[in-house]
Image 1: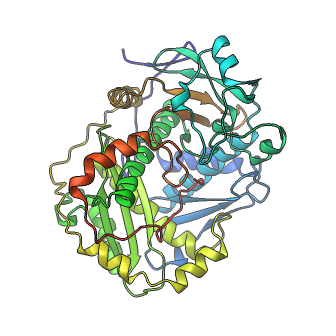
Image 2: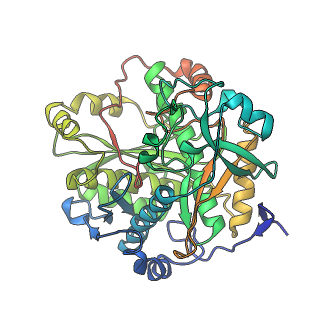
Amino acid sequence: MNCILFRGNSYQAKKGYFKGTHRIVSPEETWEKIAPLTSQIGVSRVANVTGLDRIGIPVTAVIRPEALTLSTSSGKGLDLCTSLVSGLMESLELHCAEEADLSYLHLPYHELSKRVKTIPIDRLPLRKNSLFRPDWPERWTIGWDLFNQEEVAVPLLSVIHNYKIVRQEPSELHSFEMTSNGLASGNHFLEALAAGIYELIERDAITCHMFAFETVKAALPRVCLETIRFSKVQQVIEKLKWARFQLLLYDCTIDTEVPVFMATLYDETMRHTRLSQGYGAHLDPEVAMIRAITEAVQGSTIGIAGSRDDIFFSQLKQGKQSDSEQTITALENQPATVDVSQLESVATSTLEEDVTLLMEKIRNVGITQLLVFDLSKEDLGVSVLRVIAPGLEGYFSHVASVQRAKIFAEKQKPHARKSLLSLKQSLHLPAGGI
């Protein structure tokens, strides 16, 4: 029987819920389990903020006043319970990443590589403008490589999510990214693992497309909404039409061959507002579309709420002063040519089969390591993992290497359209932070 091996333990899990997402149990069962945990992780309020917007698709905000990173997480979903679970699980995983107490080695890279297996130097998750030097000591912690079933040293900053740690070693160069990319939670180890891998694939694909869009003006592959045959997606689109919000959906699937979509959303009745964006990836294209669209709705509503730590007054002011009409016109002038009527799900009935398929797909594009850290806390009863795939691109506004993105952009040059404007005016607010 197929199973996933992690540090000598084998994992299997059958799915039991398929309505807009694939989970082991229903959102109601998950909520019953995690709702009592709010005080343990410092949550002071779980708010239904759906009514701040007129769309009506559920959006929630979860507040942790003493968080070490983002104090406001947000949730999305086709119904309120799913949105509540989404928001609180984001808070849970951030809490675990902030409080993670991992042992580490304080060594220069060239000494570290003599002692333990490491990430190849050209695939280290460097931050923008990094001053990394292989002869300068940094902190490294040990993760587990699912591909090669061995321990690998990873920059500590890329595993935890705690900005206070930067001040603990002032002599360090702090060369590496500290983001929420690949941080995921679930009812089961495999549920969290699948979610983490999906996020890595999603952000890799989006960064490749956004880099090509910004550098060579390659057109984003716009979906013809009339070709969507998934009933749940059709229902969401009808809600947006009723609320007078325009949806532009893009098929951003690349060589990983996992469906990835980007949704851009704007208010038809107001010009001086930012466009909101959402992304989604899944082996089931319907789920990928739903994730992208509901995340765009989430960004719109959370922007109105104004409670996110990473929404600054300067951004709101810029949105009010700038006229989005030019950007909207340029985007709408691009024809919707992508027919998605033939898309089929390749998701399976079990999480171990899904994860195996995802691992095969990222291996096929030259990724040689899939690194996992278990950040779960026993008293919470929820699986929280950090998943890292050296070589895949990270979040497009933070990524430093863009090796895959450059190759992708070069291939897209024949599709360049000089009239396209920048999408930097768009607002993307992932639930747990960037």
